[in-house]
Length: 138
Ligand SMILES: [Zn+2]
Image (cartoon, rainbow, N blue to C red; front, side, top):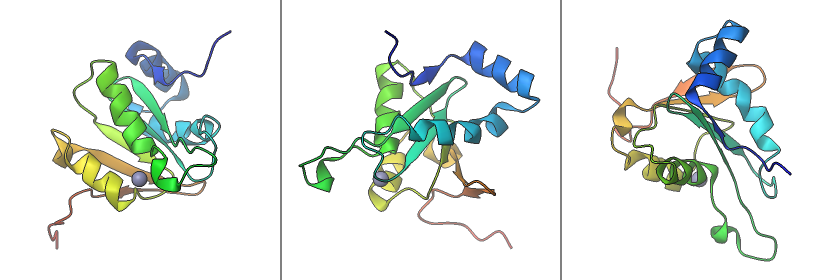
């Protein structure tokens, strides 16, 4: 019996993007909804990230234990990347803005300043700057 898949290899992701007429970055948010179904239990949110191949991170919350024992999807994703020998996260698509702890967690990644972070909803997608010290652009 096949379990849930948390990694889509780069060749398959590229093929999926081509078949959808999308870039890989445009394809990324389309996985957020399906990632919801993998959360245990789905009490809060769900996230998807990519590094050429697409990796899925989900929240793990444990009934009967305090919420601080949960694993946030961003942490799941980064841990999954490291376990699979990946050293760089290029883009992350999430259903809601990461909590402060996860922002700090992501901020400590190598190349964090280059990480593209997208907040995805049914109606729109916006890019969020991860830097705690945003620079003025105007
Ligand atoms: Zn978090």
